[in-house]
Image (cartoon, rainbow, N blue to C red; front, side, top):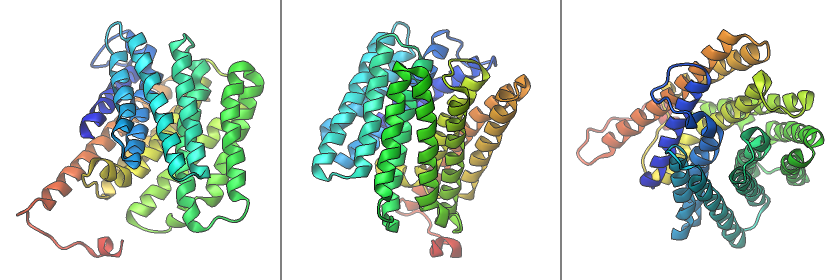
Length: 368
């Protein structure tokens, strides 16, 4: 599993390198192809590999691991000379296998949460095929956003059901999620109307998540539950802002407002969700401990504060230094989170080895 996760890590590093180039800043690797594949590399090569690996573990069948293998390998090919078409074919293959995984999981235990996540896989496959067919990333943005938004929303529904949702809440959720997917499809065929539908659907979905997600209650807790809840609610706020921008400005294909929408969705929402879920999901997937440490809050705060500088000041007010500084700090936040998580995992693994000195847990840890 760690071997399958390695390409995702390399895709992340390459994507961050491309981000530096797009910001006009010095980067370790100065290659013209990296900015061209920046969006697809991070959404399908990085995040797609994470999602598909977690789903393959849930399925428990060896063939399910073809999805993260193809997505990871496809991401790696994108950053090699002449690897765009082979990489695109592998990305499409990985998305197709991911959809097949959801079909098998549905046969095992159907449910609305799984249906919504499968809708996200449909969006991923559509995005990969359309990109392979020559469409540029700005036109594919609604599809890429729908993939991760629906995947994450479906997972949050699974947890919200523990809190005994009121009648019709799941039906409302399905309508909102279906509207997100419909908006992504419509935005390709009728950009103005489709973008309006997508923006309204995202706002409705954010309203549902804010009202019914267990994060509203766990925010008053301590330790990991509070950290996760804060990341979740902050992520919902950024996704809501993306919906507002699509509603107000309609189709956006470039410039500061495009930068704002992209990073509200994929940094403010998606990366915040990754930070919130990493201490729970990564140990289950990699079978390595990742205990919560208060230091994890530092990169989370840095991410949201720097994103506010980038989007609210740099993009929406068109202040170039704020856009560039905020972008650089966004990258620093991602790297810092990876470093803190790796250090926490290594420390916990060292303590759990046979013969390692044992220390009594603190009172807050016992209470958690």
